[in-house]
Length: 234
Image 1 (spheres, rainbow, N blue to C red):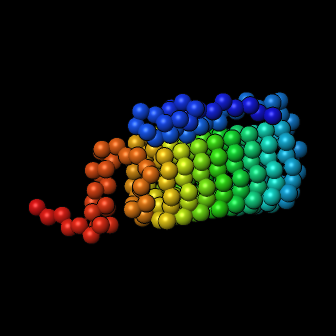
Image 2: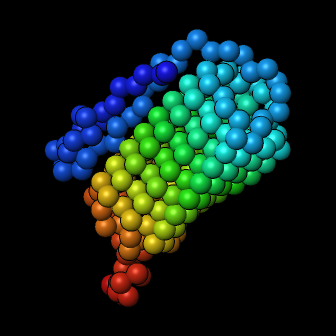
């Protein structure tokens, strides 16, 4: 089984100097892996210690499957059905796809590097100790999802939907958020200070529980004023 070391910039997930608790990051050390045999994914399948390299999984059905101590590298996941899948202690690198269905999936101790994804469905999913580093994800659907100890690092998120989601110890480091929807979301120890660009389209009133930089607060001032019904005139 992959081992991991946890602890974010605040150390062991504890509060830093500003009082915000840092996210605990996964650090995977995978065991020797067996090459994927090329067979189609199976609903409720069990994949333990498997390496999927440049696999074409387009349109396949792995709903309810379990992936543990696996590596998926350069795989195509267009319209791949992974609803309610469990992805544990697994590294995903350079995956790409449009319309990948991971609704109600469980991702724990997962590292996702340089993805190129669009319209990914993660509504109702549970993400715990997940690192998303680099790449670009368009129209990520995380409605009603639960995120705990999740780090978005140096990635681009275009119109991510966090509507009704619960975010606890979530960090945005060096990443770009364009048109984020926070409607109905609940935030606890969410650190937005490191975001290179922060654009909130809806739900700015849900920022209670988040930490912003002074510059970000000034950038958001017009949206906050509009939400509060304040007219600003010189």
